[in-house]
Length: 173
Image (cartoon, rainbow, N blue to C red):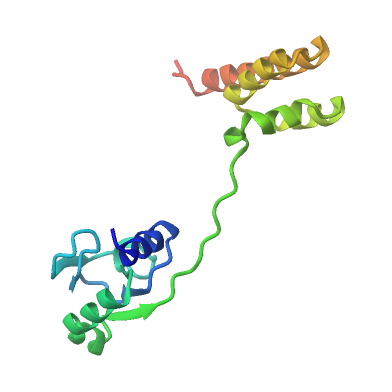
């Protein structure tokens, strides 16, 4: 594998294309481009989404200069007529992990907090899976019965709430 191939795959993994083009009309637009994986040319691609909503199917990425030059040459009429325009993709921040995606180390930090801080976090927790994980970790860490009991009490509350919601949503006679 050459250095240019490694640069190409690195850009694809990081999500930073060399250039990005967007279809701006509501209809479908057929474009020709080089497939970056097989390097067979040309590959036909149909851009079909709604550009007002920013559908991903409205965009096509060029990952290096060679692919970009080929794209411009093959799609001159679309570019000249304004059906396709070059755009800069908005960099979207990675979503923050939810409480359910916490690592064991993060949960251990929560369990090691002072009792009232732990209670405050537990009162915000409504995930049975996280609470079961916290109970297992607390037992492995040989925490006091007070802490284990607090986590078990919250798990019991969450289970009760879910049972009550199911009864309310159940069939009515």
